[in-house]
Image (cartoon, rainbow, N blue to C red; front, side):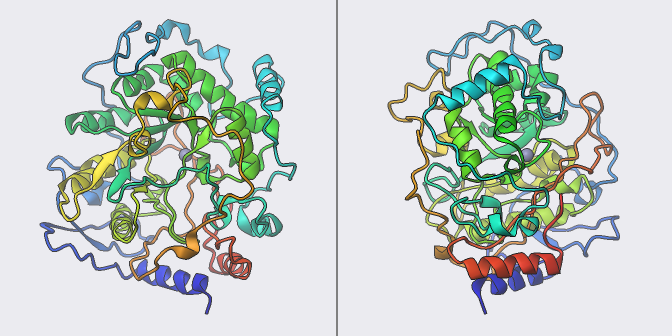
Length: 478
Ligand SMILES: [Zn+2]
């Protein structure tokens, strides 16, 4: 039996048979329930510590009423100087952010604007060669079998292929590169307040059009010394499905709004759904953006908590916590640190983070975890995270994708029954409107990017996994 088939079997079993955490110091047992009858029975999960003010697990779900929108204890004032960043400019005035000057919310920007035409010219002049292969079609690996099995694409979605230019882990064992995606959003202040109370810093992958809607919140993130990174303008479609020009527009507008709001421009990005191949990589690098993924230990298992899907009712809060325990178990087998996918878009994911996952992580002593933004876990100063403050001495921008780069090292990972249940994940692009509370009104009609397939080092495994995904219905059609 191929390794992929074996891993898939393990993971499927684990969905109803939680991995027994070996931690002996657990003091809190949570056996949750959910009102979502369509979901599997809620598993019992164990935690070292839970926030005393946590929302009860049984209440965190798709039918949960919206809580009052939180506020921050303080907000930065225009002109403030970010003294923590040498050579950073003062904070721009919010009055300079006029929404009508930017593309529409949650919409792929047009490519005929002067700005996008300028960025296209800059990419062409960068000297970085953009691969000529065609965009993928909607549907992910199952609907793109040729692309999925083409090693020259190095398509992360279908097998986890990475290049040396991708950042997908922290180098130091037991170090967690903390990341939150898809904000700024209405419950982001709750997360910021928690992080501040515990002197934690995180990386935030920002959706540009959301930043245009909530610029003050982005300034608060930045001035609290969090690491701000690019997550496209609209998040409306997986990047491999877009034309070169559309990818440039998505990344360019996100860079621009962050620069306009903060005065600095990130030099890293995370592709929505983790959907990246060598074409997207080349364009990103040509625009000065290095990809940051999340840790993946097998063709089918990534360090994705699944927290995004609580809002849509396709996963229970308890299952997300179980995923977190699997992630911890798998992280303990790695020689490096790790990066986990979480979100600050919805109330539910913020409640899970601040009520359960973060308190648990902070309370663990065997081993003790170090929680850091990705730039910090890479042993880089925060100034190296922005084009204007990076002096390029210790963090020179990658100039090309080396053909000799590894195409996934997943076959070297250790697979045990600890493999967590993050199978074929990805998330719906459904998100709340900019003018409404997050509550439960986010539509779920957007694109899902199907997740795991097999390592591109083993093409027969790849084909088998794609077929299995089709048969088992694990690949979510977007
Ligand atoms: Zn995202």
